[in-house]
Image (tube, rainbow, N blue to C red):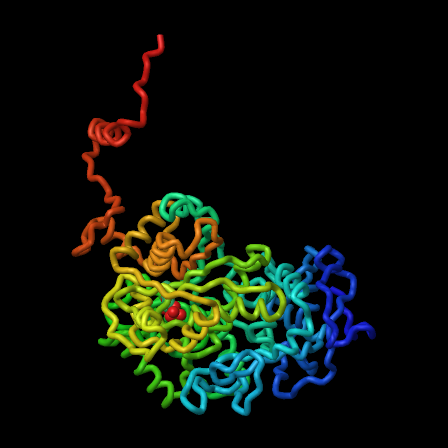
Length: 553
Ligand SMILES: Cc1ncc(COP(=O)(O)O)c(C=O)c1O
């Protein structure tokens, strides 16, 4: 792939660049315009192991596009893999877009200046005052490219296998971790999940909604949206280890999905994972995932909040990197789901987005993804956000109902939506910020409501998890109250794969749940294994549906 090493003289970084028509229209041999900064910041230079002396810098949009849309013929040296290929291309097409990101105390806006900030290469989770951190991108540098440029770039990478852009997260690398070397990225090609048109669910259960969509973030490597964030966090840890930082492993407290994702990504990168799980409070599928991936699993006789307290104490003593969503790196990956939704709608903005919330990082991640697209000119508005909580673990809902006055943690009771059974959410401030800035709403769902909504979704061809049931139940309520309109384009975020929650589905369909009618239960029918018995059952079921068979003479 021929990519010019020096920029056309007419192109300066401050210019708004047009999209990348030459490449998108299939003219990969034409040199791409890109902004150019000759000097590299020493802090950022991490040589690829396969390189000899050339500095490695982020390949940036131009070469990324070139790589992503290059000709279909085999481009790799026979003795290299796709990671090494990315590294070689980066070293031969080196240029720096001047993109960067750093930690700042939350909230301070995406572009404001302050004296407190940290390199992403530092191990830091909290601000000086003990508050949350946020990853702040250099928006001025990103704005050197116009919205059309970014749209064309991101669109050009969809469906490819080029490392690392084949991932739905890393296809937005410039907006995620712009400075990381592709060689250090730990990716399982996550993201690019199905945006499913919920035709029958909308028609039958939400009074004829015809523009209802479910973003299936749970149809993913480890079966939940957590993969989106974990690829970013583990990649950054991998980079730090390669830089010689004394990190012995990565740890998290989990309600099941975070530990599964952490274990898988750590296993892929050969980094030890330590997971703290509340004993008997997660599904068998979620428990077996970290076990199978070789993590050190500590099953603790406490709830999630207790596990969280312990992991924080442990990681402040031992060189174990903390992977919980307190760590703002993960949200950088999760926010790409918002960008992906816009992309899947051909950059049209939906009216509503409904997300189930527990520790409340994900609602903010969606806000941040949408807001970056707005600020960088890809779209002109953002959707209204709805955070849906289980009534048994509803501190955000109560806070919203109290007019955002005096947040109080609650003791979360047991809920089938076990991954959001959290009474003291770490990201409460992030969630409030996201909702206040998106004209957002908080809704809740009782156990019966969420299980019924999940069962209804399944009856229309989905295989939803209980958390998705919470979000669908919120949709039904908001539609019934006329807050969400019949023709409003609405996206419900499905956060995990239903197969992880088979136990609760079996309990529902067996009508084994105390104080629950299980109205949509569909239990199996026990039948004697002979032809007559089977025919009797089927004729009974089909009695109004089959016409009497006429004898043909
Ligand atoms: C399946 C599922 N849904 C929803 C959530 C809630 O996400 P957040 O904690 O970011 O609010 C989680 C988090 O653990 C989850 O695993």
